[in-house]
Image (tube, rainbow, N blue to C red):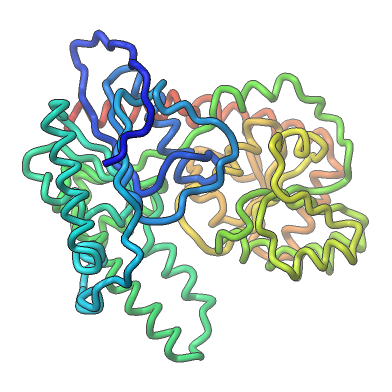
Length: 420
């Protein structure tokens, strides 16, 4: 193992102190992905109560480095394993029926090295609990399930995500269609095993929890722990001027992420072009990796504002009265909705795009619109009706501050860990 630089971690005096090993599949180098946001903010809050150690089992490329993340403020010890070998994975991988066996069959030596790293850290630091993020890591930590209390965070159920994607997947070419079904079957077996292997399983969304419970036939040790918003983000609300600077809507996120890619294409073709563009309503899209068709559309149409990645996203969003969330596929929780609630943008969303935020009330905290014409009408209504828009903004912000701050969410997670 190659330890990352660390500094002395403050001593925690707590009679209920737990020594927790956090296991992730890529370095925490950026907060631009929903996965990293969840890992970082949950761990940052838990570190106020417990002693945390971090092990990264490198299984893929790290995220972009958008800003400094001081890991030593949160983790007493930070370690990582080398990257996956450059050689081709073993052909034995094709024999797997359960996706959790992929790495043990593909890279057996690397797999053994990673499990030894886990064992060494646990022994050297008297680890009592483990928190594991990402389905790909299930096989690595399963050998420790009899000796450690393990909370396995699924986050978004891949079974639910793939099932929803396949609704829009063409039957042809048949090879791609069959591959998708094979992948779904393997992932379903992996998710079904989690509640049987580990002490407790968490997801972000009630729909994800229901999926894992259905697959496993268990529900007693599966819980929903949503995401939250940072205190810094919530505080930006009071500094905002809610007068409309632009007559338009905003959407933001990683534009290479398939659910976002689908949402942007759907909105452009079915809402913006036929309904909003003729009405002179602008559409702002913030995020890296926009597809070529969207870049070309923005060059042709001055009503489309394509910013790319921006360091201070709120300096852009402050100019818009509305956030639109036209998600049709995916699972989990759409962080952009919580962010919009926190900073004061009225939200128009599909039902799927807001399903994880169960305490939000349709018509009070947001407007729901699943059909293109209805989405366009909701946007126009909120642009024209300032009283309704401001009332909705205030109500939605109250929902976030009561239920969806990282402090509140991590408190629920801490209680769950203590009960294990």
